[in-house]
Length: 350
Ligand code: TXA
Ligand code: MG
Image (cartoon, rainbow, N blue to C red; front, side, top):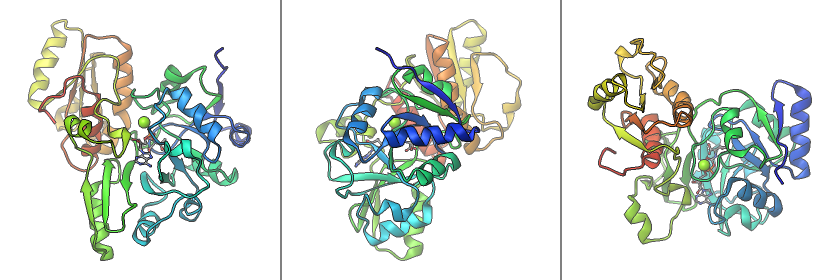
C-alpha cells in the first residue's frame, strides 16, 4: 500500500524539528541541498539505505552519497589521504563529493558493497542545520526515480516519489540546480573526475598546482557508452542513459535554433530549450513551447532553470524536446554532461 508522504515547510521551525526527529528514527524524506533535492536517510543503518534504493527503484550496485556537517565529521566515515582532506577543507561546505575508502561506520548497502564511500559536506543552510542539530550522517541520492530527471523543486520530487517516501521538506527552488562534482580522491597521486559539476575541473587543477601537490586529475566523465560497456563501471552514475525525460530529447547547436523556432510557430509539437546566454534573449518569445534557461546571461542562472524547464516541457507531452548545447566550459561542461545523458540519440553534437 502506498505511504502518505507528509509535506513539511522549511520555514516552520516545528517542521524542521519533525524532519530531524523522523530521520533519527530511521524514516526517509526529501531534503533541499544547494544542488538538487536529495532523498535522505540515516547513513549508518542498512535498512534505511535499502528503503532509499527501493523508493528510487535504484539498482543495488549504484552507491549513495553520504552527507555530513563538517570535514572533521567526514573523517568518521572515510579515510582521507592528506591532499584529499585539504581539498575538502578548501571546497567544503559546497557542491563537491569526494570518494575515499570507507570506515566500518558505513554499512555495506550504502556503498553498494564497495570499499569506498562518497562524502559531501553541503552548504545549504537547512540541510546543514539538520545534519548538525540531528548529529546525523545522511545518505542522500538525488530525489528522483532512477535514471530520471533530478528535482530542483518540491513538486518535481512529488511527481516521482509521492507515496514512496515518508516526507518532503519544501524549501523552494534549489541553488545550483545541477548535481555536485564527483571526484575520486582515494589514490594519493591520481584523482579521477567521474561527474562534472559546479566545482569545475580547471578550478580543481588550479588548486592542486597552488598547493604544490604532485598529482594528476583525470577526466573520466566523458567516456563513451562503448568504453563503459567494455569494463566494469567505476562510478555507476556515469551510465550513458541517465537524467532522462520521458519525451525524446535531441541536442542542437545554436545555429539550428532558428529552424526549430520556425517549426514551432508553424505548428510542430516540439518543446525548445534555449541557453538564454546570448544578448538577444530578451526577445519576448513567450511561446509556451519555448523556454530560456538563463535569465541574466550567466551560466549560473541557466543551471538553476534547466531541470525545471525539462520537467515542465516533459509533462506537456510534446513529440520532441530540442535543447541548445551550452558553451563547453565551467558550469557549461556540467550542464552538457547531463544533457548528453538525457539525449535519446547519442550523436556527435557533444
Ligand atoms: O548534488 C548531489 O550530489 C546530490 C545531492 C542530493 O547531494 N546527490 C546526488 O546523488 O546527485 P546521486 O546518487 O544521484 O549521484 C551520486 C553519484 C552517482 O553517480 C554514483 O554512482 C556516484 O555518485 N557514487 C556514489 N558513491 C560512489 C563510490 N563509492 N564510487 C564511485 N561512484 C560513486
Ligand atoms: Mg541522481
